[in-house]
Amino acid sequence: MRHSRLTAAILISLILGVIAGWAFPDFAIRTHVLAEVFLRMVKMIIAPLLFATLVVGIAGHGDVKSLGRLGVKTVVYFEVVTTLALIIGLGFANLFKPGEGLTIDPQAAGIAQAASMAVTNHGTSFGQMLLSLFPTSIVQAMADGNLLQIVVFSLFFALAICAIGKRAKPVLDLLNSVSTIMFKFTEYVMLFAPMGIFGAIAYTVGTNGIEILVNYGKIILSLYTALAVFVLIVLFIACKLVHISLRGLLRAINEPALLTFTTASSEAALPKAMSIMEKFGVPKSIVGFVMPTGYTFNLDGSTLYLAMAVLFSTQLVGINLSLEQQLVIMFALMLTSKGVAGVPRAALIVLAGTLTSFNIPIIGVAILLGIDQILDMGRTTVNLIGNCVATVVIARWENCFDYNKMYEFLKRTKIKTNTYGKTNQEVSFAKDFGTIEN
Image 1 (cartoon, rainbow, N blue to C red):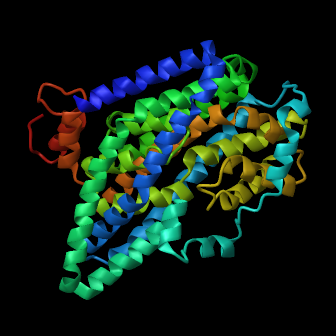
Image 2 (image 1 turned 60 degrees about the vertical axis):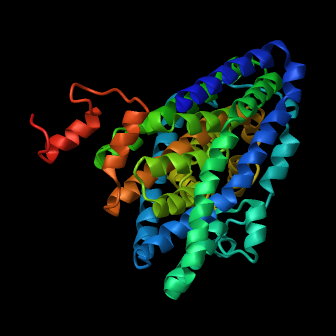
Image 3 (image 1 turned 60 degrees about the horizontal axis):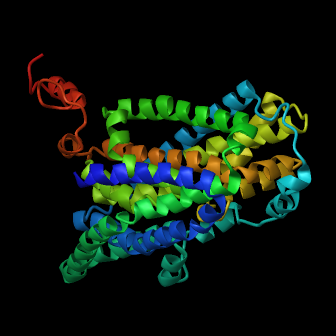
């Protein structure tokens, strides 16, 4: 019941935010502080939750040999899925041609800000990316919210606990308690989600106006259609391969997905999503490793958006790229888009730098800057969904996904059941293993 009440409150806040932003734009803009308060509350949870969860998950099982195998499998899966996201982005940009026929005043679009983005150094060389994995101070990493550095520190901390053995048990017990406390803490913070969502969506509509959806409808529609196709094809196939229902998974993560969409922030949903995926049957160690790593290396929505945004920018100025040129740029994007999680307007910074390096005018960045919040809502939501699916795929690949926990969770969240009183997915599996009759 609490789950359904919170979902209903989030949806009501979303509707009220749109109305407030449309009817009272001046007031709506000032409500952005509510969104900032909520996001800060979420950020104060992430570091201790992630650290405790990952250390307990790894050290609690004591299986350090599986870490290398887990890392390789995770990276392989990430690269395959993000490559497919690039292909879909390219395909829809060539199909819809969102940049053709669009005219706009460059000064009004903020060309100066776009130019400053083009020279922003976000450290995307391999050496810089490797160096950025290792914190000089775990306190600083936690303060900055650098998820990948927290993961690296947690891995080494867990390895040290495993090496010490019984003498480290008090620390492990303490962190286990911290993990439990932080998940309860997350529940309390989520009570403030409707307030934050109201402020975020009211600010978005109040700042941009409803009419922006019409003026930039072609690029918005193109992106959201491509994102939907990616989810319904690529992520559906991924779920099918590990024998879970994509519909059931989406139903399970509807609250964190709504949080991400309305706030355009992946961080807003991370604690809640981690909690849900653990209840969904993914081991704590895999949730703690895959999800934060995915926010750096598995940004499916952002990768797809970048592919479309490059062609949007070239179509806008009448540049026709050959397939070979498109593939070269996409390969560059695969490298430069890594390691920029947490950078404000990271996707636009990567886009501006990439266009400049290929001598393509950056007017497209200036235009996208005006609607970035709306586009960001969709792409960050797909980032979240993609990382949730990734935890299940990796867990199944490691033969440690708990289907019984998934079935129980789906029952509690009232996924549609059949005459057996089981989810359709559960019956399918039961038939496969001969536990019920056809």
